[in-house]
Length: 157
Image 1 (cartoon, rainbow, N blue to C red):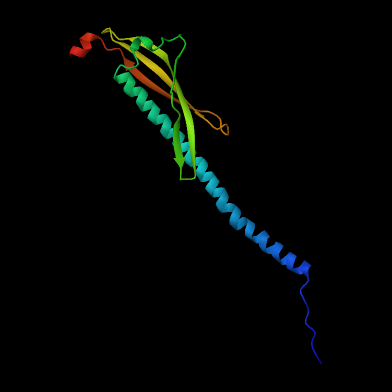
Image 2: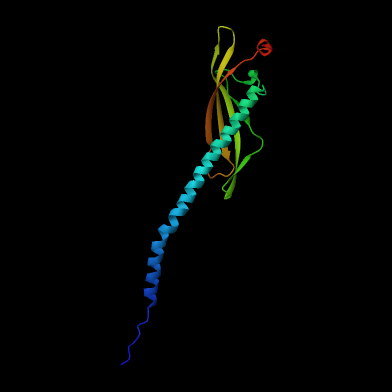
C-alpha cells in the first residue's frame, strides 16, 4: 500500500503569499508614515530657523542704521518691502535639499513721542518664505519690535 502525496495547488500558494503580504503591509507602512511626518516637522523647524535668521539680520540692519529711520514707513503709509536676491537652501536629513526665497515687509504699527522728545515706533516685520518648488504654500512669520530714533545728541551721550 503506497501512500499518495498531495501536491500543493497554485491557488493555495497564492492564497498563502497574499496572507503573508497582508500581514506585512502594516509593518512596512507605519515606519514610512513616521518618516514622512518627521520630514514635514523638520521642514517646519527649518522654515522657523530661516525666519529667525532673517529677523536677526533685520535687527542688525536696524541697529547699524542700514535701514534708515526715514525709510521706515509711518503708521498709515504703504509697508516697506524688501526681497533677498539669492534663494536660501537647506537640507533635510540628507534626504532632499530645498530652496526658498525670502522677502519681508516693515510697517509702523504705532508711533509715540515721549515727554523728553524721543520718538519711538512699534514696527511690524512680516517675513514671507516661498519655496521654489510649488509643492507647498508660502510660510509667513510675524515679529514686532520697538525702535527709537537716535539723534546726534543721543549718540554723544
